[in-house]
Structure formats: C-alpha cells, structure tokens
Length: 159
Image (cartoon, rainbow, N blue to C red; front, side):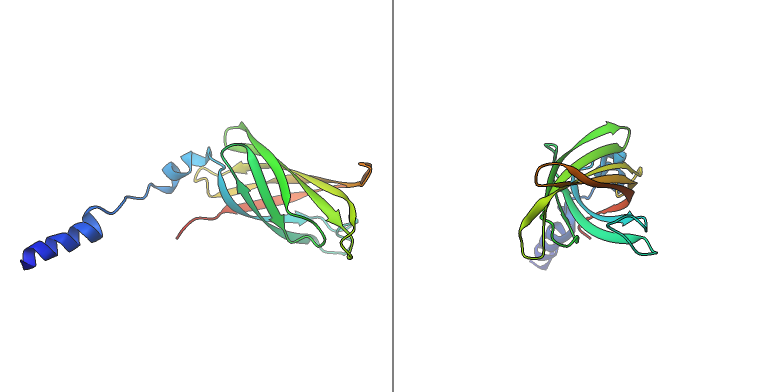
C-alpha cells in the first residue's frame, strides 16, 4: 500500500508535470512580440516635455496581442491609457503606434499624443531596445510639438 501511495505522489508531483519550453523556444527566438512588456522611455533634456538639464525617464506597461493590437499605460501625468497597433517589420524588429488622450489638471481635454516605437528584440525574445517619436496635437489635430527618444523593454514572465 505504501508503494502505491509513493508511486501516486511521484506521478502527481513529478512524473506528469508539464515541461516548460526554453526561453528561446517560448518566444520563438525573438520572433514573437506578444505578451506584456515593461518599457522605459528616455527623453533627451531640453525638449519642452523635458525642460531640465537631465534626460527625463517615463515608465510604461504595454500589452501586445497576437491580433496586432496594443494597450499601453504610462506614468505620464494627465494622459489616458494608450491604444494602438503593431506589426513585425523584419527579423526581430517591430513597429508599434499608440494614441493617448491628454487632459489638463482639471480633466478637460487638450488633445492627443501619438507615439511610434521602433524596437528590436534580442534572440531570447525577452529584451528589446529601440527609439520612439511622439507627436502632440491639440483638439483640432494641429501638431503642437514633436520629440524623439529611446526605449528599452523587458518582457514580463511568470517566475
């Protein structure tokens, strides 16, 4: 009887446990962007959205779906969640566009901010680096400002 119980526990705990794919296989050697990403965007000092002497850094979380859609949240004051699209443009390279609504401190609409990110994944599919450009528009769609910066991204994974 003890052997039967021991065999049961061995099978339950180890024998039938699902095997996790290696990171390279899991993310298709950097050819799969789908998932959730922690993004750090760096804006050079001196542009109107970063007027100080040091570069400005903003954090974002971006969820990329297999159907080409993106939902992105950033710690930029007085902006909405961004919604957008993405596509693969080459070997481990991608372009993503997200649109945010901008508001004043009282919640009144001011216009939009549209961000385009061009990024390249490493072979593991867990890290990306790239650049971005942003265009800020008023409520009538007139461009008020444009600026560029860099991005790094780390794929969120279950430990």
